[in-house]
Length: 591
Ligand code: ADP
Ligand code: MG
Image (cartoon, rainbow, N blue to C red; front, top):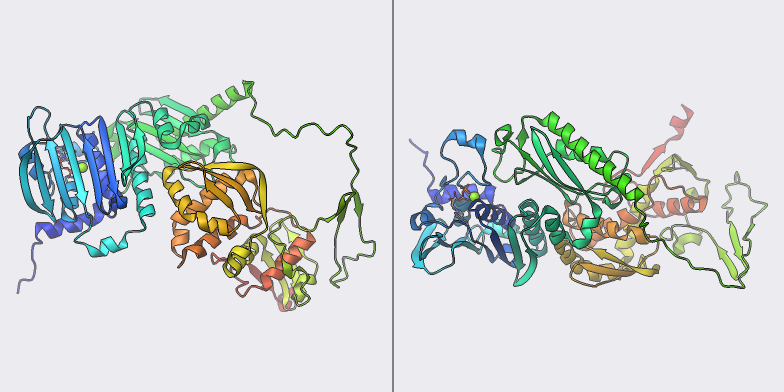
């Protein structure tokens, strides 16, 4: 009995759509690319409800004839290639002829288009792959594609969409990936009637400034190189503006955004030891190579490409970035406008500096594990201040609790500024200080919520933090919760926030990168694993505020940390599931 059917087009298109348009941002990418392929010089992207209700792209490109306006929705309908050979000389963004067919299978699409030399245009309405109507229309030259109610007939997909702010941040990312390199085209992006970007045609540097703010220009060095194999043009961040996340790293080949771990490594390698540990440079680099030397035909949405000359490209890219960094950093050292310095001002006239005095306990015996208090007092004439603990988050009311486990009263030894070693009843405990502190802070934040970090400090000078438009929206969302944890933060403009108080122990200079990390955790998978948002937020806060490996700890601090850790129900594992404690048992010690 025969059981094989050929699927109807509408079903086949829906399946294909799953690959090309997995979320609104996928449709945005395809429509913007089509507009560029049509030679447009002005492209407007209009979005409603993060693309759920409407994604519309309006261009002033070539437009289509009446019959092309219907044909473009067929599968494998393309004007961009004709033969297999053409695949090796691709000069357009699209070439598969799949995008419009896919989009029309999962949305209600209205296409209005008019050729440059026609009087009238045409409007085609198509829903779920079926053409509903076509009629002549009066419309401007060029094309407008309005995609309404995306996934209206694929409820599973529609239900999988994330919150508007998340979907919108994907759309903005797609928008940046396209507009950064096509700086000769003017673009606008508006969301729910509000203009987010209005980018004029210009240079790459102007485009970067248009997307990230004018101040960004100061942070970059230009990279330029031209060889037979490749032409490189772009900008890399000055080392002092490196970031804690790999956020703004954009590589383009022949006008297409790509992800290429090897070439990214080439750029990072060029910075060598110029960057603080675990920070990353930002870069915007366009490569121009002969289209026959690359293969872009790997996956419709994935951004991977293969290069024939990968090794050579690696070397060229690395050396040109290195040269840019070297050349310019020398230049800045020779310039005389030194950065502003913190000015403390002269001391009052009758001020007599006083010598600080140190008192200590002469009876203290470090080998007596009797809970003897080690305390160094720094006496000042104004009053006695006891310097006990540098990290105030460790400081907590349980400090004097007599029921604390015996381990805490033992002497602790810090090894490699990373592990705390201490005797416990069942042997020797080796404790990872950073993970331990993460656990303690995390539990405290979860249990006591806003009370946990209430020891906040008012900043002497409020700090301004600036974000991309998408990140700023997320910040706005997080504000109430951040406030409850002791941050005093408010919006200054749409993308700038002013921070005037923070929980103790955060440095002013680190605030920008602190929030960037927080947002990137919030957007990324770290937080989505967690059932509630506040849980994810607590995790991110705990991880960032925890004392880091490499920090020297005082006895007091170690005691406190060990005591607090043993009071946690889940002392063995850090909140991200890493092991905190290793115990060496008496038998093993004997052996
Ligand atoms: P591809 O871009 O791979 O060719 P698409 O499905 O995206 O496939 O588009 C099909 C065809 O429709 C294109 O080849 C092009 O001829 C035409 N087209 C699509 N969008 C536009 C536009 N904005 N302006 C002019 N022509 C367009
Ligand atoms: Mg296309």
